[in-house]
Length: 262
Image (cartoon, rainbow, N blue to C red; front, top):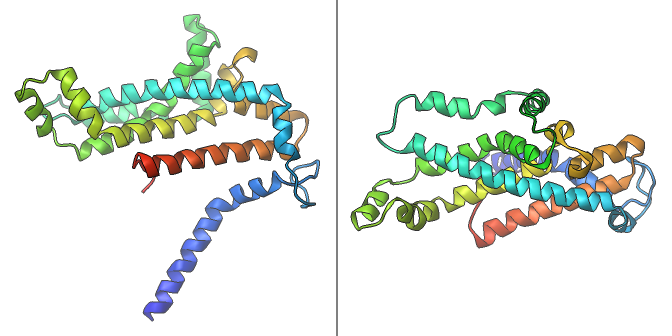
């Protein structure tokens, strides 16, 4: 009976992994299909769609814009999330911490399309327009709640007595943060930055309303491409994104001992 339950549990996990990873595996397999439509019956193996990406400068420039926007937005979001989480978690702080944490996480409750339209109206009212920094700010607002949750999780296991010991030995606030707080919270901060980077890099709704031709991100370029035609090159671009994200996760887990998931 025990062996039967163990086998059933293993089968359930295998089916669950297949359900989650099945679409990704289908996309990766399709990227090697020489057919000229997507989806299409599998006709063989080819790398031509990957080499075709290099011949499309808009994909390369879009990837560069997406990476830069994601890096800046993630750094800003993690910085704000750390300061907010530290203030909410520190003993002896002000009351109403639950309400404040809920308020900071409120962008998660608003559909991205609605949030995008609100950001567009706000940018127009302030005269900012749809420039690069407006896009960075919008992405930072969207991903900040995810970083906040990760930093709050790290601070839940943080012993603030270590900070008091450092300050009793002559360390100031900045020295204590630099030598004690930030190193101990490094896994949460790195995980928050990486998670925010991925979310920002692949985000379409926010970018759809806030980009201009000079700041088109990779998802915008892909969306514009499939408006006229759909072929396996889109699958090849998506496969490259999945590969880079997977390698980043493995490197974080192996060398920095940071896990994005438990």
